[in-house]
Image 1 (cartoon, rainbow over the protein chains, first blue to last red):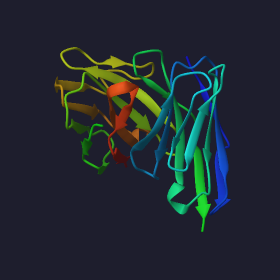
Image 2: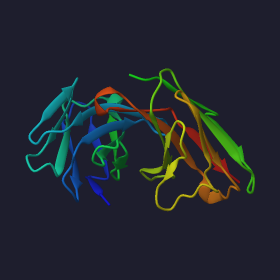
Image 3: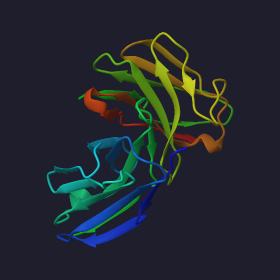
Length: 111
Length: 113
């Protein structure tokens, strides 16, 4: 089965700083999702990457999938308190839209 | 995008009882998914529910413990049976969207005492 490892597990940054979260897969990724979860709430879809080398942006959040399609990074520029939450990467299992989730990264942004 | 609602939003239940969680979508979808998120953990897929057929369960989850109904293309229920404190989790339903996107409901926070 596919396993996704996220790093770091948790992150505390000062408002205005940039940060990066990594997601590494044990297998080649068919598709890679990024979600944000506010503590104890549902998941907010951020973006999905499918092609090697693909990069997408949503407001101040940019995600990239490497050429080998086994690693993705999520970068937040000029972080704000509203960015705080748990970021989860998820892997499409190959066409059935079942998502295997990573271990999660808890982000705190200090004003 | 799909708008998904879940009921109840949270509940506190006694050991040995059962709870049925409802998931309603504002559009017709073929596939619905149920996930569990234990405290401090990531999400784990419980089962996939297609309308008109029995749900498909992931390893470690069985129908007797987590019976699922899918009576139509906009609704599904998940029952957590004979609950124990280990079942305390957030339960989320999700649906497929166009273009491989997946949308999640707000979740049901279950505490078993």
